[in-house]
Image (tube, rainbow, N blue to C red; front, side, top):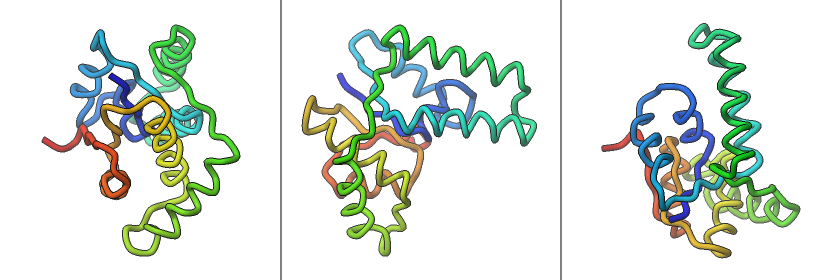
Length: 151
């Protein structure tokens, strides 16, 4: 089963938050494949930096989590998909379609554009995100959605 993780879900794998237990259970499944965009890696580092700045994580803990992430990617536990030139016009179309009504933001549109391409290419069991707006738009785009913060 293929799961596409947005960074709002990916951070839950590395730092305890609401929904972390559900993410850990998914990550530990034997028949699953976790897929992220390369952008999610950048956003993960930003989230860890924020947690460090705000005192929720110390520098050593942050460094250890970064190493764990790099190891998960290197081992193939997490598959990275590059953000390519054709994802940008797809993201623009998503912003035009959903930006004014649902409030879809730039990086979320790029994440969703990559997920939609992965869905078309290999199929997805679910798009996993902890962002209400992004989950709503992903549903409107026909993706099965799993929000680990929702029961």
